[in-house]
Image (cartoon, rainbow, N blue to C red; front, top):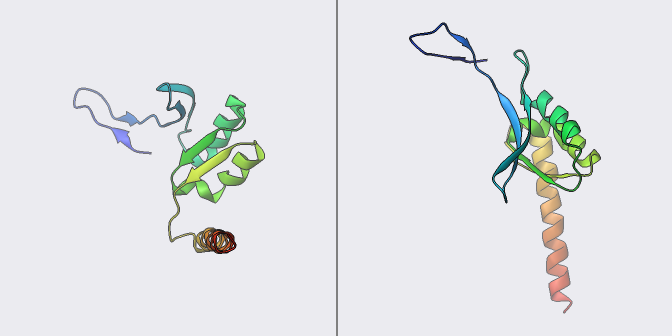
Length: 112
């Protein structure tokens, strides 16, 4: 964890929070504090359980693709996630799915 700096106070741990944001309204609809010796990967499933939503789309960076995609799908929700080259198996599976989709689309268009 990083610490904040203010010359007039003692250093203290930063507070990190994972939150759910309703884009259409500009509202934060839920939040989960990240534990001192933890990270957002562990906090996100707790937030999903707390919200008890179905059919919503979660967005997050690459770190959450390691464990939380299955949790989101199991909770009947969806996700948009960033991928990096440091997860080659996952990246390859995604690329294969897009190639199959492109081939199916081309076949559909050529049959018309």
